[in-house]
Picture 1 (spheres, helix red, strand yellow):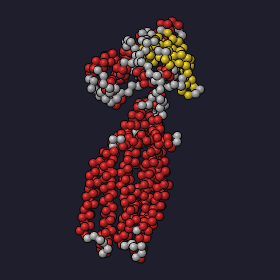
Picture 2 (cartoon, rainbow, N blue to C red):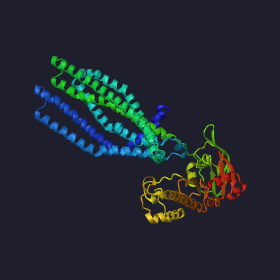
Picture 3 (cartoon, rainbow, N blue to C red):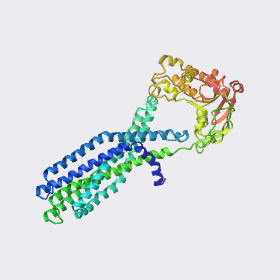
Picture 4 (cartoon, rainbow, N blue to C red):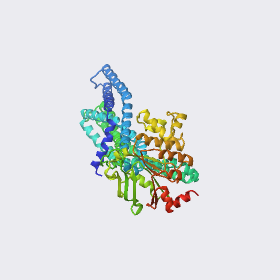
Length: 575
């Protein structure tokens, strides 16, 4: 990707920092101008007081005292403006940045998101945002302030002594060289820390998600070792970043000290010799003004490095969010009148490793179909493809005769819903989790609750009951019923169920599947490991998959009469 393309991706993220935030920023700039002006006036006062003592001043003591009072009043006003608007600017800037990034993330399609590392986004919206705020946003106003004082100080220096100003500029080349040389190193070090933190976040998320598995297999020591290795990588990267930042800071300070002392000794020499019209006051004020010249020279390397590292983090997030598959298909109506047809479907996640081969299925509208078979036979893969998880399949998938690749993802999701084994429940009320925070008429919510079998739960706990983190306050069956209610509330005519009862006991599993089978008017496709005769007999048709192929298809009675692959599966499951 070219630099121009990278900047184009970064631009909208930077705009979010200032959108509807310009007034706050303008007030902080006014504060910076007042503070800078006051500092320059105070520097001028130092010269005049020094010259007053030596008898070379044009102003009396009272006038200088009044001017000093005015400068301190400017500082007070600057402090009030900063206190009022600076925190508001920073908070709003980062709030809008997070909102924009998250909204862009929500625009991603399932195909694009499914192959990505979610830790990248977790790190970008937590660790990286803090870095951007500290290294870029926090220093913006400061750079304006030191920039104004730099220009003002330079103007005064030229007025006092053009020759001494040229000498000061020559000494200034050393700090500028330091900022250019070390700025890139700091940016690289900051990005390396971000990458290591992203990996650590992913490892931590996996460890917490699989906590029960870790305990059951007594793998605590192994996981702790993996954690410690990842944590050490973060520590090492942070240590290298700190070393680079210290190098930048000390190199800038040393270069600044050389600048300040060099100019001071030259000015003192001119003053003692009486050459170049340099007075004692001029020599003193040059030292004072050099602080304002030195300020941006010292601050610029840090700001340059911080901005570069912040832009690198923004570019990393922008690049990931830009990786999306455009939703360019045709919009279809949210109804299924004929059915779903799969013809000669082939698919592989990796080249040369076939998962599905020559799969043919015909599922009529309004029917209930079950996909059964051993683990790895391709059942869930078929459901994922029906949900447009990938376009890289061979053969055809048709909804009412329309090829899936030609259908826009947004209109497909108005047609189909899916209930999965791992139901995510937000730490909010039961009602919010059913409605997914949208507004629905009460009668529609009541219908979904009744048809999904949630009435008893709401009677016991109420719809305002907080479900806990990822539904920790609910049983597995209750979480699954919430997922059914969600799908029913959307009123999509097609409902996919992917191993929804895999983690439930036999009684609860039957109750959940029974609730799904009772949903007349819906086309249902169920992937299940539970070969319950009472459930399978009520299905319109069964597809028995083996090694990515449809081994048999038909009704429960037909497959049992054939005494083939399905018969063997069912007989073993009853043993």
